[in-house]
Image 1 (cartoon, rainbow, N blue to C red):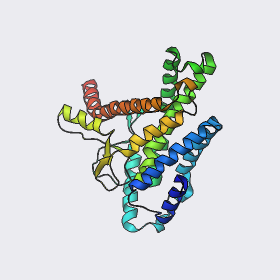
Image 2: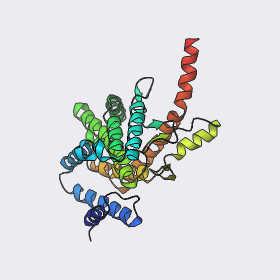
Image 3: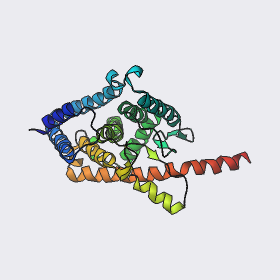
Length: 283
């Protein structure tokens, strides 16, 4: 049975699986590799756009959110608690600018539904700051003449801007929504908030490799790791030919993981920094 058929068969037989076995995970990886390989010989950019549109529709599909009367009382209570936490998380920003939507202080946070995971990822991926950051990244890339195949001038900048934003969008939607839904993992950063400096730094860095599952237990962060590799694979569709290949896929995945570790450290300590900074300003 082909990987695509195996996936379809699995989800028909298990519409609400509690976990994903190694056989399904193997099928997912094979399916991803097969599809990316096929896309490379097709109309790459058109297909990449279609993939992103599909992810957008996944966020807003009406069937993703169950009607209130269709949710059992205990599940409804959990769903409502998660909604309240999301509303608070979606207001979190560094200096009122940089979004921190994925950070949560409560270690016993409510489990997010599939729709809520997509909602959170989509809000992060389409936040105005994300576009600004992509623009800055594209400017630096052009200044250093990265990806020379894009050329210079307005056209070169536009291509770099599109590639930078596509990297962010794909990585966020796949690593923070699609895989967390399939693998039943929580895409949020659970802030430690106490303990020694070194211990908190190590904790923050470790979250690139471990995460909380929907069952509340810590487990390998397959969503983040596979998401980074998948996004790097998709990038082969729109990067210049000289910047494609398996080695570059894993280089990009490692770079994104390192950037994620640095971001986790900032997320861990920013509330402390903010409290001291604004406390001094007031006095």
